Structure formats: C-alpha cells, structure tokens
Length: 405
Image 1 (cartoon, rainbow, N blue to C red):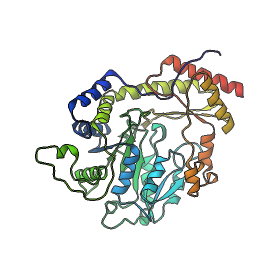
Image 2 (cartoon, rainbow, N blue to C red):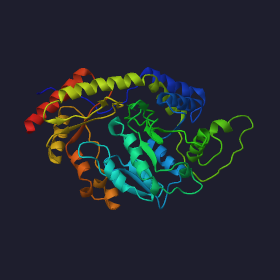
Image 3 (cartoon, one colour):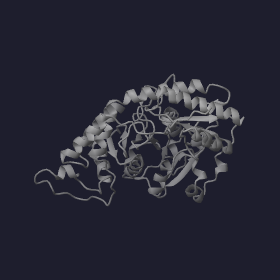
C-alpha cells in the first residue's frame, strides 16, 4: 500500500461562528472574566443538568481548587488511578496531601474497585476517579465502596468535609463532557466533577476548565460558587467586572489565594462550541462505530463507548493490539506515521514517570495498568476526519499489523 495521507491527531474544529464570537469580545472593550464567561457557566450548567458551574483556566485548576475548597491538605490521603495523566495526581501533591494510586482491572481502564476499597484508610479524604477517553466510571460502585468504609471517614472540624459522612468523590471528568450513565450526565454524578476545555478536547476554549457539583444539604450553592471565585482570583471579594461599576472599587482580600480565572475571550469560543456540541459528539460516535467494525477481528481489542446504560463523550479511541509488546506497539506507531497518520498513547502509567517513581511508586505494583499500556495505540478521533480518512487509518493499521505478525 503506497498511498499516503496527512491526518493530524486532534486538530480543533473551529468555524466562523467561533471566530466571530471571539472578535465580538475583542471589540467589546471587555476581555477578562465578565458577562460572556458568566453566561457560558449558565449554559454549561444547563447542559450538564446541574445547579451551578464555575469555570477556570484548566481542569487541573478546577481539581486543585476543589481539594482546597474541601480543606484537604497535609496529613490527608487522596486516591486516584495509576492509569491516567499526571494532572489527576499532581493536584494532590499541590495541596500537600499524600497520593495513593490504585491499579486498573485486568480488562479495563477503570480502577479496580476492590483495590480501591482496600486503599481507603482513616486518612482518606477523597477519591479521584478518571473518565478516560470520555467513558464514565461506575460511580454507583464507587459510592458503594465509599459508603462501605464510612466508619473510617474523619472530617476536619469546621470545614466543608463535615457535610459529608464518607470520603468525597471528585471526578476527573476532563474527557467526559456530554457523556451519560444511568440517565445522568457527566457532571451530575460525582460530588464534584472537573472538565477540561484544552485545545485537544471535544469542546475547546483553547485553554480552560470547569467544576460542577451536586448540591450539598445545608450548604448554599452560591456560597460554594463564591468560594471558588475567591480561590481563583487572589482571595479577592470582587471580580474586575463588579469593581468596574461606578463607585464600586472597594474590595478585600480574604486569603492569599491563586489566579486561575477564565476570560471572556476563551468563554466566547466555548459558548459557540457548546451550541453545536451534541452534533460533534454524534459525529465522534459515527467514527467510533466505523473503527469498531474495522477492527473487529482477532488482532485487536476495541474500546466500549456505548452500552445499554451508558454513552461516552467519544473523546479518544484507545485501540489495543493483542499480544503486541511495547517495542512492537512503538514500531507500529512509526509505521503508520510514515503513512501520514498521527497517533498517540494514552497514557504512560504514572509509576513509569520520573516524578512518581521518585515519590516511591513502582510499576511492578500496578501490573494491570502496565499490561493495558504496552499494546495501546490512540487513533485520530475528531470531527474534521472524513470517512475516507477513517477507512485509510483502518486499512493502514490492519496492513501494518499483519506484516508485523
């Protein structure tokens, strides 16, 4: 097969509507967090079927600020998956808590829930499940595990932790905006859920993120929102838009907090993307269906993006090549690149990375995650892909794998 194409891995799908929206903000005289950002938050909450959304400059910031909202810090433990991107775990280190990693199951990218249960101690304050590729975790099972260990939960006095009688479930939903499980949208399942709008995500603001939460009995959603706003704007009691009103310059700083707000420029881009987002997800699932059909043979393990009670956001297509070694997987990536197809790997398990190895994590303690990783190749999955390009990707990989066998 001598044919060659130029197929990028994950280019942003930007139309004239997004461009016009950003230009309108540039012409408006107001660029930072303002009315467009606030309206974007309202529309995101409507989409996720939640009461409130707080936008920030990244999903990483959203997760870290949620840990800080909960007063999780030194002496506490937070559990997450060994198979994820660093942000799921680095935010735990940022607040001074101890990172606890759990292996995956042998046949999925979800945490092993039995291992999760065993990992909960009297120091555990939160669990960060990861919706890899946009496939939602089994949150019913996670809540069941948390409930089973509620006798070990010891909230810090005078903090939001006291409004929970078990460890808090903080979903890393970076990939899963628009996913559904058991009739609930991503963002409306876990106690807190954090989304990413990075350039390669299904819906992009170039850089950005958001957190949503389930209403907590005895706690005003507005106060949670305002606390997030203080956390992401230096602890300031008024944002720039409020201070801009006539005679309203006066403000206070309640704590030396952080700077992580989203701007109207970014929000304008995201708000336009949200208008056509259901159609973008639908196209992703069309491509997934073609991939699943094309890789239905004995050589591959295809990901499950739809089930009787669930549908993913269709963010990533993680294909596994049966019985391939790490070296063979890497060789396959090189071969398809020579045909003009950009692929990726999601992810190196955290214990393989220097930072986590230096913290004492050993890959040998997470054998299932390692086995998932060594033969995984992530294929292009985006709404600019044509059917012809999808067919070419399938044909190329089938051909190269057959040669390597």
